[in-house]
Image 1 (cartoon, rainbow, N blue to C red):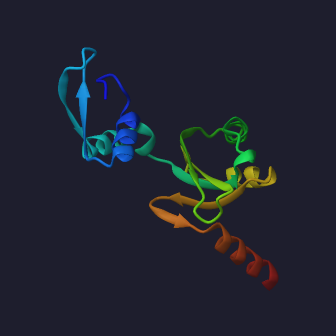
Image 2 (cartoon, one colour):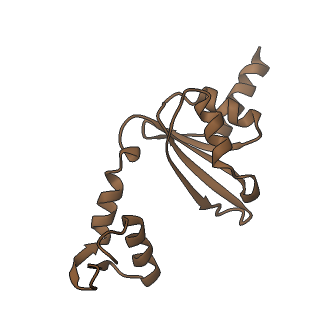
Image 3 (tube, rainbow, N blue to C red):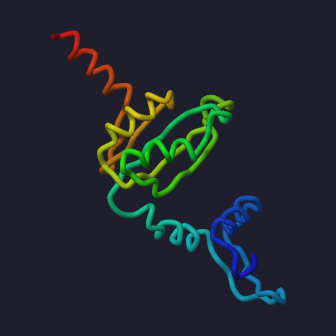
Length: 148
């Protein structure tokens, strides 16, 4: 790795080569030192998006339906900012992706309603260290409605 590369590149090289230590070189290809996977994880953990107040929202969608521009517009219209976004394959359905968003709010009620109105499927939300099950909440609301 070159000394000016981002730690994402370090992680990619380590994963691709199945190594725990990545050598760092200068422009003349001279050895400058090493970066360990732990160093890289520590740098990743210090990112401001991972620290502080906020919540995490997970959406599942087909890859062709993914548009971070549209999703961010919908979220920002609710006066909420996306601090971080991560796309990963859906383990259950290989044709789907999961979009994990770190948001600067703890109240996701309006955000979830807006996204669902535009047919985005919210599969999970995390706030204050606890997992919120959207399906369970909907079932509870249905039972409450039926009791009236």
